[in-house]
Amino acid sequence: MGVVFNNTGTVEVQSGRLNFSNYTHNNANLILKGGLLTFSNPLNINGGTIEGNGTINVAVTNSGLLNPRYVSNTEFGRLTINGNYTETNNASINIQLGGNTAGVNFDQVDINGTANFDGNLNVSLLNGFTPTVGSTFDVLTYDALNSLSNLDFTGLDINSTLKFLPQWSSNKLTIKVVDKSATNLAIAPTTETQTEGNSGTKPFTFTVTRSGNTTGTNTVNWTVAGTGSNPANATDFGGTLPSGTLTFAANEPSKVITVNVNGDITQESNEIFTVTLSNASNGANITTATATATIQNDDFIGNSSNNTLTGTAGNDYINGGAGRDTLTGGVGSDIFVFQFGQSPVSGADRITDFAIGTDKIDLLSSSGVAMNAPISFTCAANSTATTLTNMTNSVFTDANGALTGNQALGVNSAALVNVTTASIAGTYLVINDSVAGFQSSNDLLVNITGYSGTLPAFGSIPVSSFFI
Image (cartoon, rainbow, N blue to C red; front, side, top):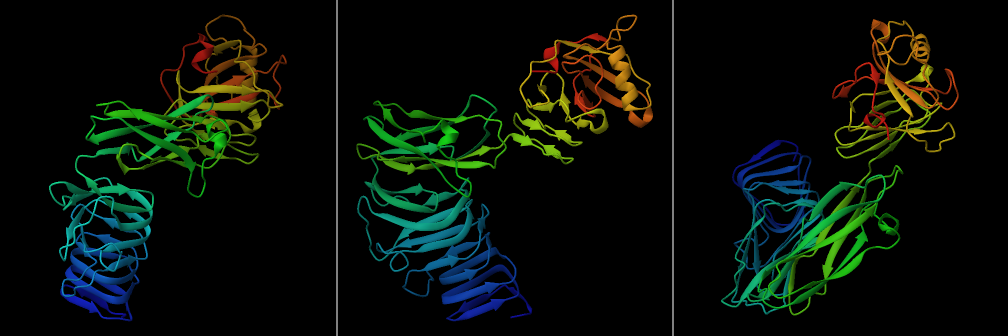
C-alpha cells in the first residue's frame, strides 16, 4: 500500500501479507489473525491496540496496548516483532494464561531485536486455569534487553498462597509460580559500566538482596562469563573467571559480590561480562538472575600519524605516539604519555584540557622504557620568541624566571613557559632528556592549549603537580 494511511479505526489482517509504506497509528486497532505486516517506516503505536497472532516486520514504539490474544477469538496468540521494541510509560502488554504451552494456551510476545520496557504488563488467568507451584511461562522473549527501568506488573497474585514471580534473564522474561512464603533473591544493578584502570584491579560490585521470607538460611552460587560481540575472558580477571557461593544467615537481607577486573595500559575494545546467580537453596526463588557489566577501555594509543585521541569520563591513559597529536583526556585523572623523540619541536603534540594537579605526564625514553619524573621543574620567564625553535633554545638557556642571570635547563629536567608572540602564543612544556643541551629531534615540546587550575608562578614548581 503506497499511499499515506492514517489508521484511526480498525484494520484486520486475516492472513497473508500486508505491506504499508506510509502508515500511522493513532488511537486505532490493528488486528492480526495469522498474517504478516510489513512497514517502510518504524511503527509508532500512539494509543489504541495491536492484538492477535502474527508478525510485524519493523521496529515498534509502543504508547498503547499489545494484546497477543484478540478478544473476538478464544485462541491464544504469539505476536512476533522483527525489530527493536521500545515502550513508553503509557504502554501496556496483556498476557493471558490458560495452559502451559506458549502461543497455544498462553500468550507470548517475541521480539527479534533489542527490547526497552517502561510500561505495564498485565497478567490474567482464563478458562478456569490454575497453575501449580514451579510452573514457568516465558511470556516475553528478546535478543537483548536494554532497559526494564520502570516496568510495572498487575495480576501477579494467583490466590491466597500462590503468586507469579517475574524472572528476568538476558533473553526472556519468565513468570514463575511460587509460594508467597518463599524467599526471593535478586542481583542489582543489572547493568554496570566502569573503566578498567591502568594497574592493579578495579572492583565491580553487585548486591544480592533477599526478600519475602528471610527467617531461614540460603545459599546461592554465582559465576562470571564473557558475553556479547567482545566478551571478557579469564585474562581480564587475573587468569580465572571468578565464581563463588553466597551464604545468607537467618534474617540477613543482602550480600555483596565483588568482581575484580585487572587494569592494564593496552588499547582494546570495550569488553562485556555477566554475573549470574544459580542453584539457590531451601526453595528460594531467583527473581533477577543476571547482571551485565561493561569494562570500558580507558587506554588510547596513537600511531605515527597525526592522531586525535579523546578519553572517557574516567581516568584515562593516552599516548599519541609519533606524529603531531591532539590529546584530550576529558574529566577524570588522566595520564598523558610522551616518549622522547615523538613530540619534538618540529611536530609538537598538544593537550587540550590539562587539569593542573590532577592530570599527570608520564615519560618514556626514546626506546620506550619507563623513566622517572624530571628531577627539576621550573617556570621560565615569558617568551617573545617568534619561532618554537628559538623559544625552546631560550628556555634551555634560562629555565627559571624567578632568578637573575641564566639558569640553564639541566638534564632530566623540565620547564613551563608562556609564549606571548601571536603566531605561536600559548603555554608550553619543554622537557630535556638525559643529554645536556637542546636536541631538536629528541627533547620534548608539548603545547598545553587548554588547562584548568592555576598556572605556576616563575621559579620552582613541585614536580608532582605535573608529572608522575
